Length: 216
Image 1: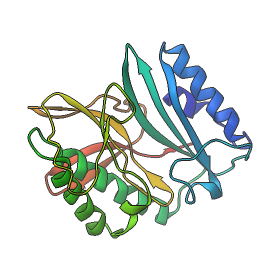
Image 2: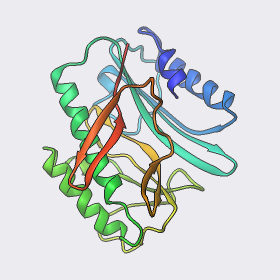
Image 3: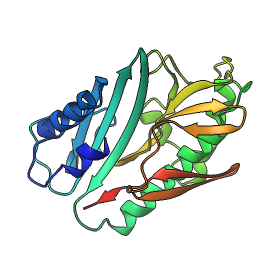
């Protein structure tokens, strides 16, 4: 994912970005199952964007669900060409806070319905009380991109050493990684490298390092 993001240049088409990402996924000996791309004016309009022939000049979102050995990982990353605006930075901080809240709230024995209530509270606390309604929020993963999509009132409990991929979003911003819910806490399986920028998500239960937008 990071190699694909660093290969992007203004003027490319979304189809080209998708091809670069799939190439890098295959080169790492994984099989891409879902590849999504959106850019510029399409970014705030579409939460689950199929790539198009649109050329990008300002910012791009890349999404991948990839399989290896029967197990699936999911992640999203953003690239910005030029300095982001204060509004963009604030929005990404808000989504990192929401993402940290939902991941830290995911603990063995808790139900997906209870966790979803925490998610809704995190959206409201960060100034976006209705945005959770505009796309599914993720859920358990492992043998499929999502084995169970979380929803309000769902009584299904979280198991120890179960994988989850939450994907909270607001218009133009999103965070997504695959994590393992272990007894010792949250382990981010698709964590960004030390060369990728970091933003710290702030949550009632603590903090969690999240991938920031790559500015090139």
